[in-house]
Length: 112
Figure (cartoon, rainbow, N blue to C red):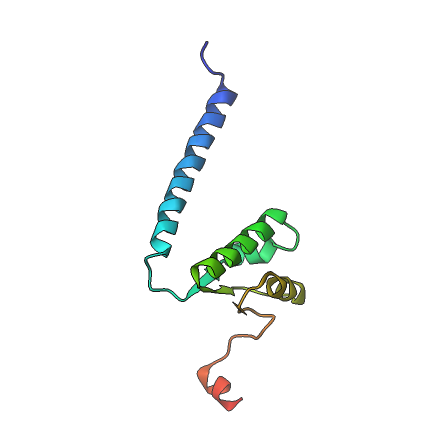
């Protein structure tokens, strides 16, 4: 019996997900060979981690992976106190974003 359209669509999506996962694993293999000292947490995970349990789990996993690999972690686009507090509680080493300060020129920064 031939698969119906819905089954075919699910199979195509599953194949794409697996291909993406294989690429992600290859990328992670490079991580251990790079002369890096920090692991950056992408803003797409930080932005929604308060409301989204999956994003929160990903952020926590990245922090744990950084710790295990001896890398400092830095979260980007921290925009609220709640995000900053959660990241601190998770053990994130550094953060950047509007909550901590707005962009400014070198001249203005030097005057502080």
